[in-house]
Image (cartoon, rainbow, N blue to C red; front, side, top):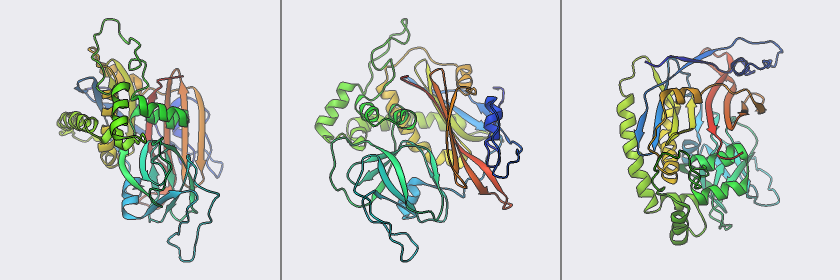
Length: 391
């Protein structure tokens, strides 16, 4: 059995846990008092491998109650959340309220209203379709209940369309693949997002650089040339949905994902006293990505579209003979000690990014979330690690 790896999570309104994790100075709560930390135990299980992709399940002995949060797909489908172009009028559920119009639609800005009864969890890379162009969420965040219409930072994933596709956006039930998600969540660059949509993968190996001189990699199934062909035939507006769901790309993704999912479920079906909360993902001999959640419920909710996104990346990268080890996956989850950026909204969330030596980790915590006893606290919801494909 693999050894347990211990990581401090966030403290009450302060991310003390993260500060302890990385060796930095702890933040203080709104009252100015240093708060106690909580500890989460993660264990990386044996890998599940298919073709050039390896998935390491991540389990925890404990998990949080995350039933008090809504996901974007569910909220949009039920009408609990509304997303529209910034220039459109929107009504909230409160009678008589009318959001003022802006000067017009913008590529990188939408408006979101949370009309539901739960805080809304957004993850960078989630696709919403409609409006003048399909977009993706630009950054992990939490949208509280009953707030004013929220200007929402997004990135376009449909380069060639700027026409009215309806006043409101719908959930596409898709997550863009890691190369695109990295350019949005970390680089926050619209041009690089478009380039990653067209190229498939931004990894060095996909671009032609040799990862291992002794390996004999197969050509990627989703090369830049094949993606260009799909765009020409099926997606002239460079719509992410049409590119990666159209035949034959969509069929290849579905077959690959079904096989990985079958193996993954078989490998994790007999967990005893452990909760499946995330994965570490590798391509060939390179550990590249990790998504970990506060609960098995959240992980299982996001798993189908996360898996599809990981598979698209696998198909866009060359196949390698050499595989990564369990120790490689554990090492990928080590704490980083580099430059820190953070963003917060009092009473809603705290977002923190830390980068070091070509890797970036991003954490999102809900602030003042009421637990079962009614007491306010800080609750970590999502933890992301990225191996950067560019500096």
